[in-house]
Length: 248
Image 1 (cartoon, rainbow, N blue to C red):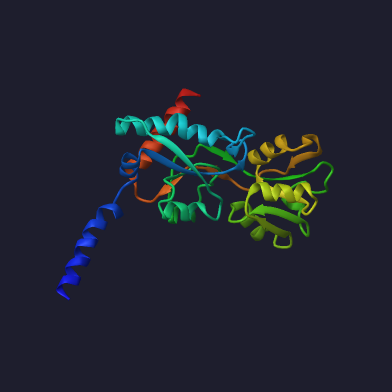
Image 2: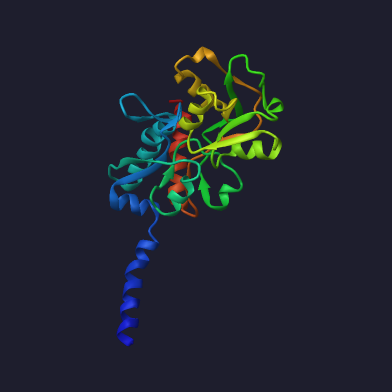
């Protein structure tokens, strides 16, 4: 019995440093900052025709946050990318699969119970993408209509709370929701306005579609990270502030 207890004690003592490892220590050890991001959320994060992950949020990581971390660590690091969606992004952080969510994540009070956020780097609001000529002109005209949204999004929450009579249909990601709209399976797709304009621009016939409605929500985008990791959060914010001040 004593041998078993000693073995467990040694195993726990060896595991403790790994459990207590900060994000900066993990990045220093692996040489990589792993971000969770999107594959179909233009202009913030998407995969282009060359199969490259690009977008404004990714640029912020690679051109602003990565250099700030490299200066702190005194060595170069690489950025690795993994796909994240509204339902998976917080679990990905919690399991240490990613170090930072860099996409289109709204900073909310409820989410702050699970993760920390960086400074806000963009502000938008919920609108609707519809076929040109649609009777839907905003949230006030969606009662009884088929409305697409992404699972786990603040946009879906708004529809459920404010217009419960709308026929809300949630999809796992933005491309699936947009495809449902293109095929006439839904009457409108709700998301943050800036994302809808990005989708419209990439549609086969952009002039067939329009973004309608005043902002029905306030959506401040931030980069999410594990809670209580102040050194890492500071460096993320330093990088973002330098990008803002440089105007690049």
